[in-house]
Image 1 (tube, helix red, strand yellow):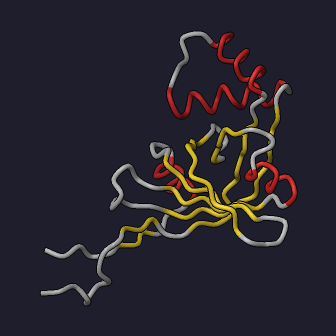
Image 2: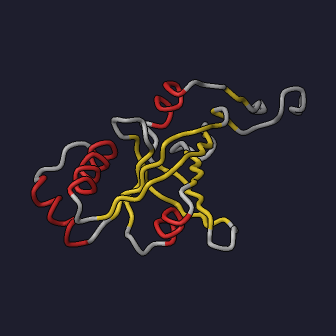
Length: 156
C-alpha cells in the first residue's frame, strides 16, 4: 500500500513537543556571499523553547551566525521516512568561558542526554575545549510533514 504524504500545522507548543525528543537536525546558515552553509548537527530544546546546538567558535555555523543571526533547522525523525519540520529563527552564539555559555551547555547536555555523572568534570571539559552554544529562537515553521504520495496521486 502506498504512503500518503501528510502535513500538520502546529502552534509553538505543538512544534516544541514535536522537536523535543528529536535530536537529528540539519542546520542552515548563510555564508558571507549569501550562499547556504549546511551542517548535520545534534540539537535539543532548552527550557525557554529555543533550539540549542553545541559547536566550536571557529566553525562555519558559529561564524556565519555571528555575522547574520538567521538560521533554518530541519528537524528529522530517527526513522528516515518519519515526520520532519523546518524551523526558521533568530540565533545567538554563546562562547566559553562565559558563565552564561557554561550554564547553557549544561542545559544542552540535559535536554539531549539527561544527567551527567559529574557536572564539575563536564563544565571543566567545556572550558578546556572552548565550546560554543547556538540558541535559535523559532520565528516561523512549516507544518510537521511526512513524505509520500500527494493525496489522489498514489498508485492503486
